[in-house]
Structures are given as structure tokens and as C-alpha cells.
Amino acid sequence: MTTTTDAPAPADFADDVARERERRKVALAATLRLFAKLGYEFGFNGHLTVRDPASDDLFWVNPWKVPFGRVRVSDLLLVFAADDPAGRIVQGAADAAVSQTIHDEADLLL
Image (cartoon, rainbow, N blue to C red; front, side, top):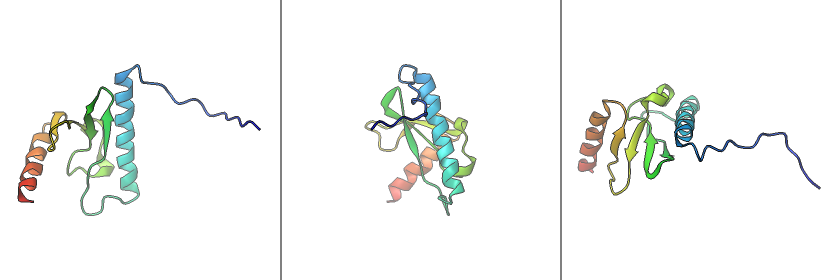
């Protein structure tokens, strides 16, 4: 017995890195907003990430102290992860450097 479906095939963006990057960033922002709607940011928020399609060493992450429900695609930070446990920020908001310093200082206290 064969089963047919009217669902369209998934989009193939593998050959278009910029389109795939934007798709992943939009999905990340939407996921963060959904987490907020479902109540998963009680008290403080954490980080959700997606890999950048151009490199396995890069990923997009939500900024620290921005409520999940308020994160926009333009707020996301591009972070370098290879051999850098602190996650050096490659691209993102100007206040990301302050966020990085706060995280670094907190790590020293642990």
C-alpha cells in the first residue's frame, strides 16, 4: 500500500548560505518567542542557539538579559565557538561586549 501526501517538499537552501542563515535566524527568534509564550523564561533566561550554515565553528545565540518574548532577528549574536569556551562575539549588538564581560566575570567566581 502506498501513501501519498500533498505536503510540499522541504525547501533546499543548502546552496544559498545567506538564505539558509536568515531562515535559521528567523526560526531561532520564533522559537524564543514560543518559549516565552509557554512560560519557559521564569526568573531569568538562558540561551538557545543555531549553527551558522557557513561554518561549524559559528552559531547564532540570543543576547543575555533580553526576554525571550522580545528577541528579534536583529538582536541575535554570531558567536565563535571553536577553542573558545567563552564564545567570542563575531557579529551583533554593541552591548554584546558588556554581556561578554559579565559572563567572563561570573565564570571567574565559579
